[in-house]
Amino acid sequence: MELLLDTANLEKIRGALDKYPVSGVTTNPSILGKEGSADFISTINSILEEIGTLPLHVQVVGKTKDEMVGEGLSLSKLSRNIYVKVPVTKDGLGAIKELSKAGVKVTATAIYSSIQGILASIAGARYLAVYCNRMEGSGIDYENVIDEISSTVKDSVVLGASFKNAGQVVKAFYAGARAVTVDPGLLDSALSSPLIESAVGAFRSDWDEKYGGRSISELV
Ligand code: E4P
Image (cartoon, rainbow, N blue to C red; front, side):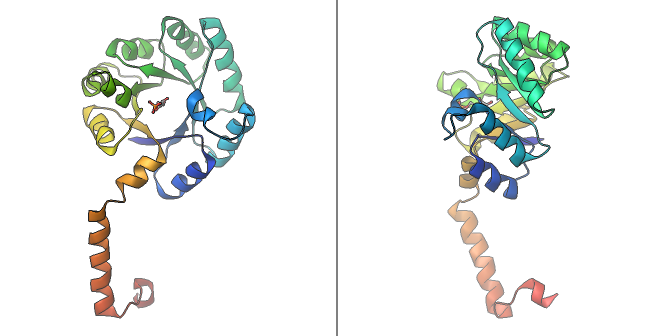
């Protein structure tokens, strides 16, 4: 299973790499648009520098197949760790096919239906990004779509995306996703429940009472 970070914010990436078992970073034009630098290449290079050998998924913005292929080829030259994100439209599918054939690693994105995921897999995409929260908001059963895709495709990884809470992440994994991409803030919130804090606090005060506040390192 894989956990990716859905952010282009260097501080968040740095903080999350320190704490979480991170397998890579995903971006899209909206995520990049939220960050300070208007210099696309320097933002991408800074993220690549921050994450070392981990994969970075970067989306094309071209409207036609040829534009997407051109952008994908250029992006893939930036680093061998780049995955080119291509939306699964009619043109996008053609671009996925051509880029994959050229050896470019492709993440199919903007997936709202099983047929998009299955076709993108046949076209050669390595990851299939399913937009869970957006689907839920439109009354589409994302768990069923993930289940159908993951039970059908063998050569691509279903990547749950577009999450707004930890419950959706768990449901995506349970439905068959083998990877998810989430904003680090969602992980921070999921791990800051008062129940967890109260359990950990009680263990610590029982320890302090018994061992006078000394650390395990001092005693071992
Ligand atoms: C990642 O691949 C997607 O672009 C992203 O998760 C979409 O998230 P959003 O629905 O919060 O914009």
